[in-house]
Image 1 (tube, rainbow, N blue to C red):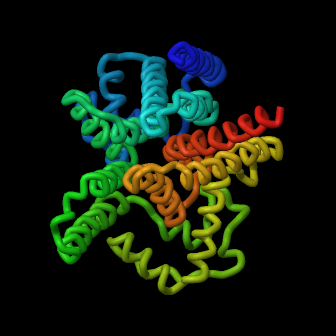
Image 2 (image 1 turned 45 degrees about the horizontal axis):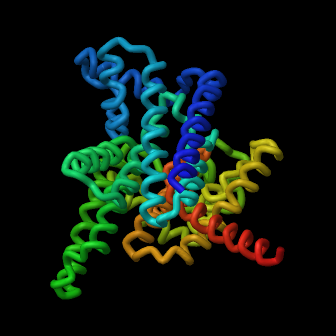
Length: 378
């Protein structure tokens, strides 16, 4: 058994390394439109100049990552190398977390392979964007939550949570998910009555909404996308306002107030755009992709979702473990439905690892039953 497990780990590493070499040969270092604002912001920090784009503060964890490279005068090849290493660490921890949850190295191998051998996901290691780091940090945090930790690993765990929270505006889904896990697992409020628990929950939820409203959302123009009827950012062939012109709220300093006003005055319109955003988020296919590309996406993701659902139902995991795997997906789905789906579908990648883990469990459960039935039939 140990030899088979070592072979699986070796194959995972060799396959991941070969994919990184192939992707680097194909992409090199990709500096795209959004890359420049992170590079400029970090350069201003290195040169101790005033920052000229405060919006990047919503992504502060990425300039923190870039800072030592630019300070040392290193090329961006070093940045993508470290991003790839972080991705490899995340895949290794996904293997360990899956093995700890299921006590089955085969399930762990499948889960890690879905992550480490996924070319679309791994391709972001070679972009100077927040995505690779956020995918890796989110995966590291969720996996470390499930694993036993020494004092040193506890320090790494807490630092990873803070860093993941700062890398993207939706980074708050990491501490929220981890907090719910520990509340369900440790039950610190078990001795308190339900009204105390409700009051604490209300205060915590109110604080999160305040942070969202006053810090994370002010530089985002949500109403522009709702007025146009955007479903996918940058794609204007599917616009819901072609069929109905919504009422737009008066300009306010509170984005959440604007959103609440919009929903109450345009409930059917809001529901239509939200469901369409959620659909494109989950299906990941896009109208401007080729037929072959869309078919490949659907043929990969649909079985993953089916097996993940089977794995979720048959897992035998605790409520806390199920919450840890499900909440990030639901939060990111909700965020996308309230904002807009990305042109490249990047919002799905950070929450795929827990889906991969459940899909590996469901897929192996189905495959092992099939193999057992075949053996008996012979």
